[in-house]
Amino acid sequence: MNIGFYKWSETPDDVKARLLHRAQADIENIADKVAPILADVRARGDEALLDYAKRFDKAELSSLRVSEEEIAQACKTVAPSLKQAIDRCIGNVRKFHEEQMRRVEDPWMFEIEPGVFAGEKVTPISSVGLYVPGGKNLYPSTLYMLAVPAVVAKVPKVIMLTPPRPDGSVSDVILYAAHASGITEIYKVGGAQAIAAMAYGTQTIPKVHKVLGPCSPFGAAAKQMLGGVINPGMPAGPSDSLVLCDDSADPDNTVWDVLNEAEHGPDSAGILVTHDENLASYVHKKLQETIAALPEPQRGYLETNMAAYSGVILTRSLEESIGVSNLYAPEHVVLKVRNPDAILPKIVNAGEILIGENSPSSLGNYGIGVNHVLPTGGMAHSYSCTSVWDYLKRTSIARVTAEGLNALTPAVTAMADYEGFPAHGNVLRLRKIYND
Image (cartoon, rainbow, N blue to C red; front, side):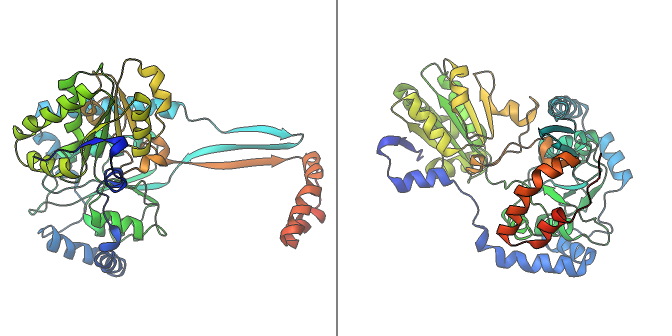
């Protein structure tokens, strides 16, 4: 098995570029296939969605919307132990996002200069659509990570789209997680056609203002192509994580920390970055036998990505390791060093940072409460973790008194005249001023 081992200072630039870029989907290569689907959904609406369900999902649907009876039956069917696990995790996610919401400021204004007041108010987006992937594997955790902050943010209308199974149903576990998260408007639509339905609206599915959730490359292409119609949310690609360690890290724990995100798929990435040569060598060797003992398909996924995107990076110092981490901008950072409080401020590009041996990624994935829908593929350079802010918007507010209007008019009219906007200037020069 080929597992990457890289001495960073000696690694060629083209290899560094491959590791840093990961396996982000090349959207341009599939845009020609996606464009006709988008146009078809826009033109034919529900009829197109039913045809695509038959073509792509092998499902003959009589209705696109999941009924109340289907949701009620699902809630009865899910095993009690799994219900308890979902409820426990949702509880923590709700607590975390409620605390975020508590920290959202009430409408505020302050006096910038005499008679000139400005501030902001925050309101929820009026409608959002959540996309929850289907396929062979089901991820109720992704559902509640998307749904709970939407509900906490008090978005007036939240819909969810997910692909149907061949028998026309949606997984009982997915429906239970939706119910437990507070989502009741659910539609059986997947792929690029789901994004188109939320962007344009159909006879059954309402148009929304923003869509969130990870997609296949086809769905991701649809989001990008419809960016002028709908807010496509944060781009989400294959999972990646970086385990940043010094010589205090537990070697065996570190092996599993590397594998935690890398097992998602052949295009995922899990990397150890350390300046401790003993740890690097041990983990590199131990990964071989640990991966060999895992079941399929995870073993195959790891064998593929360990050769291309994953492995071990050996640096010359802790500072260089921090630099690599910030350059990589991971979805997840697992920070295992002697003095994490001193290092934490230095890590500036990451979707999330999990601190210490007792905070592995899987806890963040499911139940700590932090959101696991995070920027991937280096997008943490400019994108944030999913939060209530993804469902809110800021609006500037201002009020000016007669005193402030008189004081500001000379400067503003001078700017308007310079930029060639006579009405901008005249609205001040010719204005009737009223005393407050």
